[in-house]
Image (cartoon, rainbow, N blue to C red):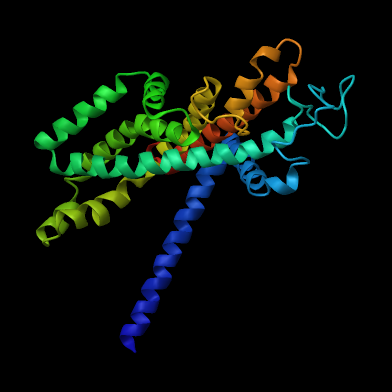
Length: 304
């Protein structure tokens, strides 16, 4: 009975600590007004992506041959059934933008997940074992970082073949060194801490030390980097789509929409402006949210 009561008390104490940490995190996060706005915009994007069939007035691939390059509803010649107008083959721009949000989230999630998982594993190995293993890993990462990210992604996609999935794999490989270097630096700064030394003296194995002892204390900077990489992945995927190396028509991806509208930029401004604004607003919102996460998770930036 005594042991059960002690266990219950420790669980309550752990829950209380987690609540205090969450409250402290939210306090510092909401201090950044831009981050809060970015969070709401991102949340709206998630809702729109999940409920795309309910929000979209038309199918993103349906072509209305009697409504080619119809301007937005408020312009001369516009139609209210096409609120943001139509593209050169008569597809509703608003519907394609709404469905395009799904691809943006999918791209960000896949790229960040792949880069984060492999980056953490490689960074843990390099930071923990050091020596020759560390030298080889970091020189490879330096070589990757020596190339402009978009150029290297473009070369990799050219090797793998055009397509959305290949574009995401290429972008993930390009972003991986950032997570490797960040994880390695965090591990090296934690290696000589008392709790790590105590775990070593207690006989903890390397795998346990890396995954249970070191990794939980390296999460904060990785979360911030993952948020910023999320927005960069959307931007780079749109750039690859614009160059014809990413998502292929008729996929309603924002970069592909820009590529299809290039020749109509002077006489149909809406087919270029709205996809561009969608990319701008999404990337800006995620970057603002990343700044808020950095302020809330970095103790050096917290005001007393």
